[in-house]
Image (cartoon, rainbow, N blue to C red; front, side, top):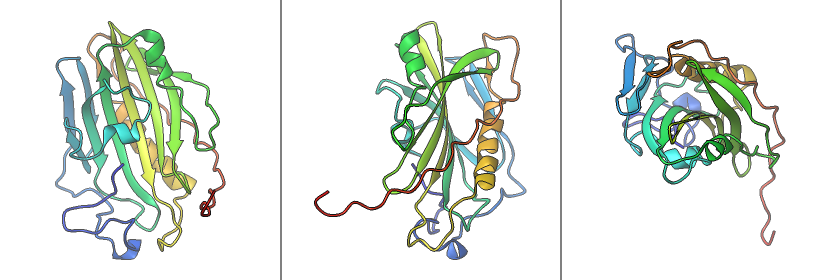
Length: 232
């Protein structure tokens, strides 16, 4: 989980948003980026305003955000939004992860998309067609006092490998931060930006090509957890 910061600036979670120096939109000079994984034959496009890397730890920490990914899962690419369209909200970051578990089986791969909500309730998996291939779809979220991370998980098995995409939206608790909670409308907008990247995915072994992927239905808000008292 990473906060929306830029070099020499203060994270929105550390200082009231009015004083944050994070840009609210991409620079006019920025261009779309093309990601290509030649080994696994996967491609997608990243819009202006997003950083792109193939190395974990440069933009984010994959196994913190993608909690259900097995230890052997290899991060192949991650895109991170480096501007904040809602600087007065609790929005902390948005990441698009692409990863592959090279030694997997079909059942284990699908199980990765079955995660628990912040309340502990198990969510049922659905399926989603991505670039002509059926992916299992699940939702995961976590946080101590409030929901700090929401992860839409998509997994599919092919020839001994589990292909995985994580659409992660991170927030921070508004208590004592001086900012307001991100609204559902704003959250939906960020989720749409992530889904737009997923909609550009191309799988080299499928002929249908990329096509629009809908934004998953947002989970209903859950009451914040009260801080634990000493001895509890």
